[in-house]
Length: 115
Length: 109
Image (cartoon, rainbow over all chains, first blue to last red; front, side, top):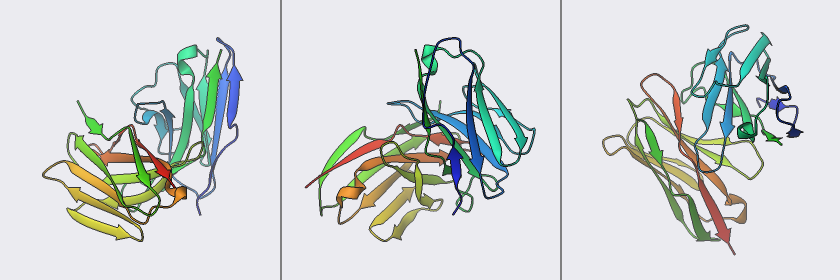
């Protein structure tokens, strides 16, 4: 089974701190995604990457950046955390474009609280 | 704008049947997913529909009507472990995923 691992399940940070959320997948998937999940809202795409060193903005990229130096690792960076970035962050990956044959596989999530 | 509507919460009894509806208004349609997410865990894939009709997978079935912009997930012989959130997502004309807010299903003994 494809495994997507998010290294930090729970984080508490202070406003203005720099935050790194790490995600690693072990099945040689091309595409990786970062979403945030908030109560009452659907998953919102922050950034995605379809290849090493490639990145594309999603629907809500403001306040975030990403890094993909290796195929298996996709990092989400909050340069200066703010309280409105308190959320659950989900990483996901697919082999190719999303379809019935290439479903998203998610990590367990990183719950970030910014004080 | 693009929109996916699901009920926020549903309650059902162990052993019963429940239907979770999803209606969508998107720019194009290239498929619809249902995912299950237990509290504090990763969403996991349940089903995919791209053609009209019913797809059955054990106790779970998913139905799609593209003309009506409508899908439902049917869960039979409910078990306590089915207590979870169920997420509906549509692939739009740009092959981007649009997500509903999810339906929290509570199973009572």
